Image (tube, rainbow, N blue to C red; front, top):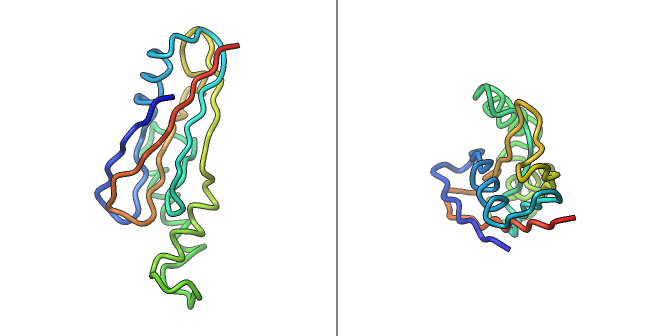
Length: 131
């Protein structure tokens, strides 16, 4: 298993980690199998989405802010309740098939760490399994 450390610069940010996950796949040497990217944080998540047009990431962040505003009378008193909800909506992991020793992502897809309570340094664990 490979541990990636991902630094974020803003409170809310999507960081493209596709190349780092692909490097972990190459390092593992699996020709065919699965790669799992897992985020062990309750205010950050993992998602797969378009990585060709940066407007998609901006739109996702804006939509999440409309759905889960930062100030909404939450009971959680740390001031980051919205981050917990957004991370739960994104999920904590993504699994991608590996074929021909490469991630079997769609043409426009990328893997993102979704930061909702930064800036921070986050861990992402990548586990590659051959089959």
